[in-house]
Amino acid sequence: MRIRNYDHSDYDEIKQWWSDRNQIPVAPEALSTTGAVCVRADEIRLAAAWLYLSNSKLAYLGWVIGRPNTAYYEVHEAITLVTSHLVNLADVLGFPSIISTSGNRGLTRILKRNGLISFGPHELLYGGF
Image 1 (tube, one colour):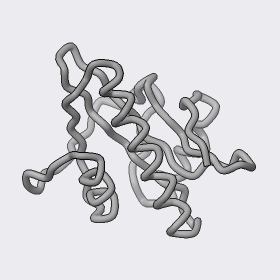
Image 2 (cartoon, helix red, strand yellow):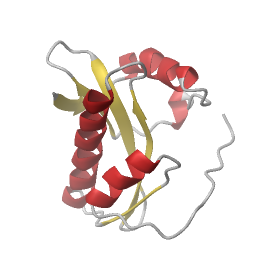
Image 3 (cartoon, rainbow, N blue to C red):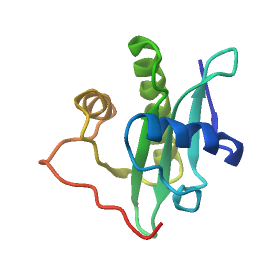
């Protein structure tokens, strides 16, 4: 597996992942240009996530998604790689503080392994698109 930058040509497939998971697809205009996709050696997309940079030293890691109907271990590894990549990228770009939201226990564990801490249940509200 390897990580590459998100490209707009990835959108249609990733949009379908959200739909397949009964989630509202994020509009392409709402996705940061600092996105990453984890792909297998055969270029099959397995996971994606986006990093939003602010005008402070705080970044937001969001819209983490894995390919549906794929082996758990493969998607888990891909999400681990893509989130770790973006956490490291944030630090390299000068954003030592990161926030993220998760309603998924597996993703929460992955984020905690990347140094994020949990401080209570929250809802993610999304609008405008």
